[in-house]
Length: 132
Length: 80
Image 1 (cartoon, helix red, strand yellow):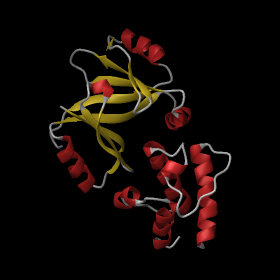
Image 2 (cartoon, chains in turn yellow, blue; image 1 turned 60 degrees about the vertical axis):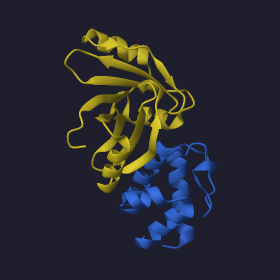
Image 3 (tube, chains in turn orange, purple; image 1 turned 90 degrees about the vertical axis):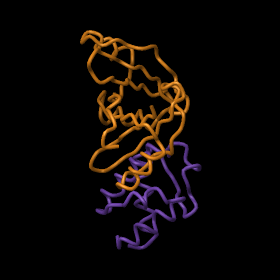
Image 4 (cartoon, helix red, strand yellow; image 1 turned 180 degrees about the vertical axis):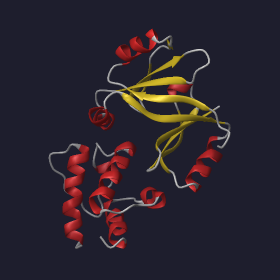
């Protein structure tokens, strides 16, 4: 984990279309929008040469938990995602460091079926891992 | 604090965090019983419970609870 590169910054938004339009003015290119039925979110990756990607995350209408986050925090970054070679090994390492897992590694639509998992720590907030 | 009092306070927190009009918690209540209680809202509940009772849970505690009863056991073990 100590050398795992930052893959993207997760950015919660009420409208991918509106947020992507603003990021495009800053030179980012937007990917097609993916529906992630497991996480009940729509996803759009924003990339710009030489920069860390930004993942726009728009909750489905029935995703009340993320709707509450939007209501309390507004449109804002809310997680960092690191790329790891072996996600099960990194999972065990973070548990050992006192992170709380939201769920064990699962395949994710937005990452072509590559596994992801989410963690939370009081001092750090939310962290995602994605397997290379 | 009596177990009954802890439950009363937890029900207020659950209603507030999960945006419920009312909820009745028992020892056996688990995430499958409340649609709004998912892995992300679980963390929101933990943060609110810690703040309300002035305590901190360990990650092992947070991940091992299978139902509300075990959550209340953890609270009582911290002498709330």
